[in-house]
Image (cartoon, rainbow over all chains, first blue to last red; front, side):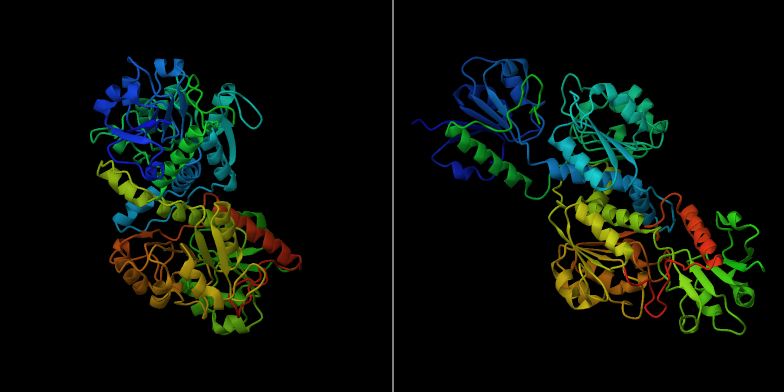
Length: 315
Length: 315
């Protein structure tokens, strides 16, 4: 039996791959050499999930890997028409990020409710200034995105007694469809974006949507930066259409030092880290090894992305 | 029937007392005139719960009010030997602060786990720096204080999948006794002080106790400032005996601008506001009116403080 070629897109070797010794011929590649190496690869592991090199390298001559796995929840960075049209199976890292992202959203919601950024500002000024803060229990959230991350966020917010609605692409039990979106965000205290980036979701949080929200509402994005029209959000904050926001993801990452978002009033900026708890790289490595063993044994793979939809459907 | 004299210790009139028109003769007093007015009062409402004037004014000649209500959970600011020994009934604001304080503790725990203060620092510097943060689910907390606030904190932390032990004065079902304290704080990721201030609890968080905690542990105090030896906490943080802390209450409040605590490494300072969500003054006012109506009708009062223990026992 020929040992399959496992092409890994990353400068640093992922952890745990040593377990595949003898079962995979591991070839590391950077972005520049990716296109040249794709035809020899049986499997592509996109470990550097910030790279869009796959999308650029995929259209090309020769055979393509039969399987692509990305160490991320979203697949927008690698999908292209040719990959979507072909036979290649794409899997993602479903299962690793749900709980961490949900906790991160709870941290942001509670920090905004309890005015924690202002407390830290006042601490720096050595100023004792009592304020009244918001009770979270009894407030309303709308989570946009009905995948496992969106549902984990809803579970965690409900555990804090926040009445939480979920909006997905297709209405089903416990999930609202897109037709309910405007009505739900108009009454929400917390609007949380946790949707995949697709042609349907790109730019969905625009000036109109921020205009629909309550002046007391806060907006959180832990999905993908391009779900949001950033200029519209900055304007909504400046004009106090909404009370606050927190972005963990951005149109362009890393956010450049000149971006006006760093100083937008009432905005918390964090560097795309909501899902990345201590040990996450190990978990991602172990998950890939497990999938590889299944693939090599000819068993069906979990976490298979619907390449037209742009995410793992059906849950 | 004589209309009872209701003495209110506060410069500002509490809300909702208008409902007692015709049923109480309301007399407002400041700290200076409190001692002179106590003998005429049937009821004393300690609305300014930051004041220790009752403790100083209580020992004195003439009759004392039959009932004292404080618009706070703790009663340490008003208790004195004479009040404890006498017939006067003391009630507190049990029921108003539990959920807000529990949420506030959750906000602090999540903020520390997710490194939010550092994120806000980096945002001010316009610096994008990814870090790995802590997963809260699966960690362990020890809540010191088994009253309604401590139990609400435990419920909220457990809702976030934190394994939470409660320590109280007397061991009972679901509550550990003081003998378990050192063992529990030695293995906790989060140690939360929510005990009343009594002779038994004063200074209980001292150098020895911070030394017992894990270097990765964080300490939170939402009880009373004097539960903590502040110099010992500052030293424990400076020497990295523990990883972080958050204090909402202090030995002396307001915390003076010269206090070294403002800049203690890894310490979040907030101005005694954990329980004070929007509408809290209305809630406290409405609660007092309800208790007054019961008292006037000769019905038993809830929230009666055991004056020797220093809190409402038995739940």
